[in-house]
Image (cartoon, rainbow, N blue to C red; front, side, top):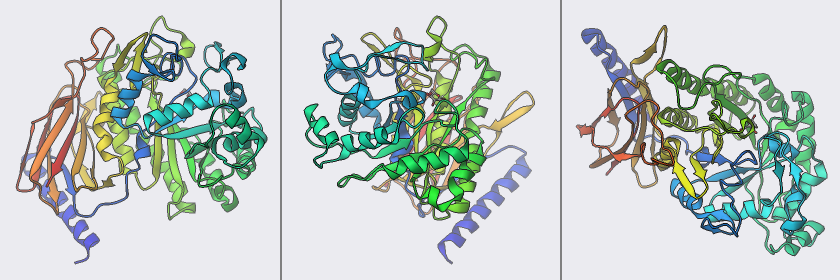
Length: 522
Ligand code: AHR
């Protein structure tokens, strides 16, 4: 029998087994079938990417304290942040925005600090931006992190020449005005820049353009973004937000338009109530817990909607869907600047992150990059800072636990599970994905969305057997447990032994409101 046929038969058999067992016992058997011997697409490490904007205390106080600070730093970048993000295996970092990107003029941020232009950050709090963190500082940051740079160019208020010259300044080794300028500023060799975005949210803060108008402008800008030497730019065109598939259609339908980019972005934030009142990040009841997780699960529909359009025009999947802004967005912490978007982070954010990363993994054939908004001190951050103190949030720990999926190959899974019910609404109680890495280790990442109930999940692992099984868990006493500057280790991962593996079947006892990663090795 051919392999795909065999797989379909196995899935049908296990589904039939589950259905009949459920009929007899009228008890839901939670089951995740994992096909271990027929790996699918590679899960791009860039799905685990991050986003840093000149917004609130993300750059200043977050990444950057300056070389003269008492806070231990390397070239002005906080050492504690560098260490934590390297541990987490950050694969890429997007900068300088966000909405800020389409107001940013890169030449303001190069050369001697005392000569750099001070501007007003009109989008975010109206604060003065002294441009002490600019191109050289950002590229140094990515070098110290060992990650790829993802630079977002200015379409909304910039010019074609300005964007073209930025790419030349960054990546060219020829003798030209821009390379001479770079050398004068102390950087002899060009940098490598992997990702370059042609504007941000150009349907909104990036110029309020129509889709047709943006498509023309993008074609024009893209024409002048050259590949210098061996540097190959992966150009990201601005896509829509949420469910606006019409924008995707406009960017995808014309071959001459889609020839000008390699990736198309989409933004989706998980909003609990409504945009006017997004609820508190820390003070919530179970209905709000449920609403947040439900909003996170909708990412699947967002991706399916845009992928369906992309599949129509690009069936070979040569273009990537780039979810370069996602995350939970709540009301700002009381007493903080509303323009700084500072929010705390709880166990709800950890389960949310697990849901999203599992969705991205399962769509590895189309989703080639994703960037959580935003790395430090803004929205669903992985790090919070206060002077010389640092907190790793529950979301950080999920990214660290899930980094085993980076560049692994997705495994086919089939999940059947009970619902998590709240009032008259219900969602799936379990989130899951699985992959196999280059050493043949299988990793299964799971989340139990139910905050009141532990759940047992049975996972027949088809096709291979394993000798060593280990696990890690992130859970907490309360739904809204969090890490604070006073108690930074309230929510931290622990080694997990609530599982068994017998006759090729892995059984996992997931605590309520938990995130679990299991490793199976030969
Ligand atoms: O992440 C905050 C803002 O949300 C970004 O600047 C913008 O792109 C989006 O609307």
